[in-house]
Length: 124
Image (cartoon, rainbow, N blue to C red; front, side):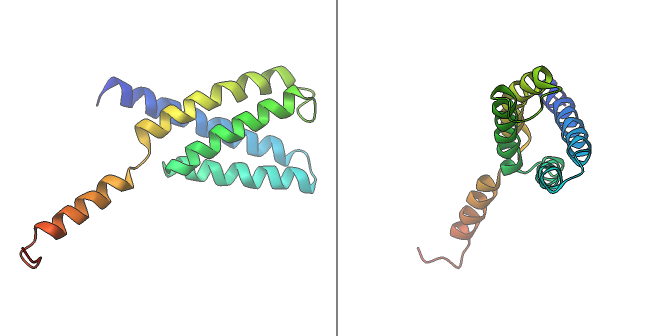
């Protein structure tokens, strides 16, 4: 296993841990808004666990949203500094994980089309 893949796996587990802790934090709000944030975060965490490409983009957008909410003072008043730092860190980490770990469906589709055109049933 290459060093980049090892680093990516470690970062993936760190991102999952952060997302799971965020779900717990959002549930501690004990209101509908917290439940909504927790459900969206849990959905993103599930996608990251499955290594889906859109989940990594969603995690990056979620990190940017957390940063902006903390920066403008709308949310995370008690942990404003940490929310901003983690929000900024999540963005490049999620994009890196997207490039390294996300399953590439376009390659598989290209191979499938190539196999069909190479078969004997195709007119020459």
